[in-house]
Image 1 (spheres, rainbow, N blue to C red):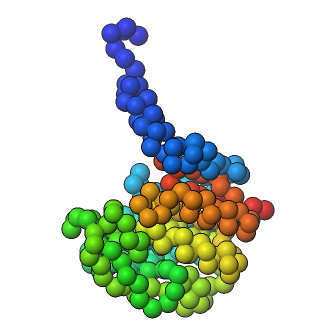
Image 2 (spheres, rainbow, N blue to C red; image 1 turned 90 degrees about the horizontal axis):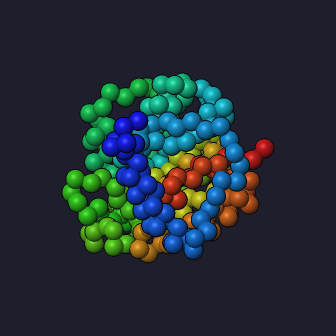
Image 3 (cartoon, rainbow, N blue to C red; image 1 turned 180 degrees about the vertical axis):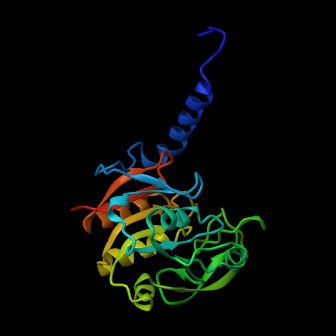
Length: 242
């Protein structure tokens, strides 16, 4: 190797790894959640919207719920294309509905224009700080604007009853802080879920990592084990233990 040529991106990779460590670990008291059960996982979807899944637990008749889809449904489409699955997608944001109408969607993608939260009815959602962003949140935090709107929501149990499902094989959640109430319901009602793919939002100013620790502890009591943690310690895959 020419000594004047450095390995590609070595310096930037080290810098990114160090920055990720310095941002993520202090918030967890330098003891973040770790993988508890090793599984063979496959990533489905884009770098931005993808999740790691144990595809051996997914079959064409699997019940898959995708909560919070925004304008990236690469995960959902990958499951449909590669595994022949059907996806029930939930998002109350009108901008998402408008965006979906412009897409060529397969028949296995079923969209429901309401959110999943801790109750049935309406919920207050705070607007994103920029007009070109799509994500709203039920959490009042400095990362969102002061203005708010109301959108229809229902509990996970109510959605399952409406869809006539008695279990969920894969539950994906990217719902800007509402995941904590959904997980509380899963734990409280012992809702049978095979895999949970979730982006936690403990970085919101009014939440914190203690909320995520409690959520993970509750799921562990229900037999869910961590099988993937992203470097930022925000995106997790949990799989029901045998």
